[in-house]
Image 1: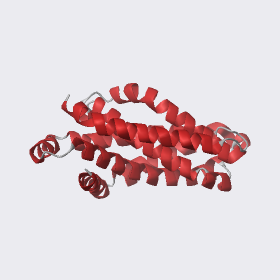
Image 2: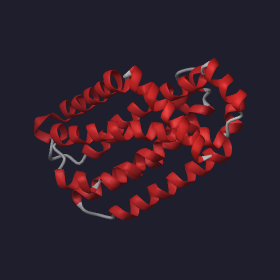
Image 3: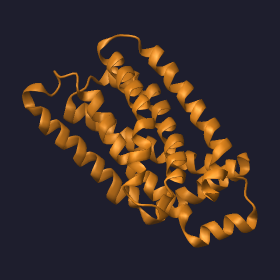
Length: 219
């Protein structure tokens, strides 16, 4: 299962590197979203508002939805589906590989947007660095949940509007935990409590994906 996961992750990341969709489309979209968030706050409130963590995760949510559709479109092509069926790949390994590739892409995007939050939203650099472990866990959980919901919505074969409808209720607890832990690292509070909740959510989504991904792909 682990070997299949690494092969699938390497395949998805290789496709992404060649297409450069992340570099030329997703990252600019995320940066523009962050800049618009800073403009919405205005120069008076940027750096003095507590909305920075929430705005960061709101932009990451939009980026995540784009990248889930991209990831599932790759897997949903006829050639890929036929290859998976012919080779008899373990669905659990395919799920873990796609979730890992998506997590790597989200971590890269998240690193850029965290730097943007410091520059545009004027979040404290020390607090932002302290929030980094929780951001890594939350983005990994979003990748696992997003891979699962992407398969449930039919990936590239389903309506584009179906994924947000299915995924947003499941993403909401992750976004709340991420925002609270980020805010706690900036302003003080129960940082590790929310970090542990995020870690439990990550494990739960990984377990559900390993058990259900094959069923969802066949449905």
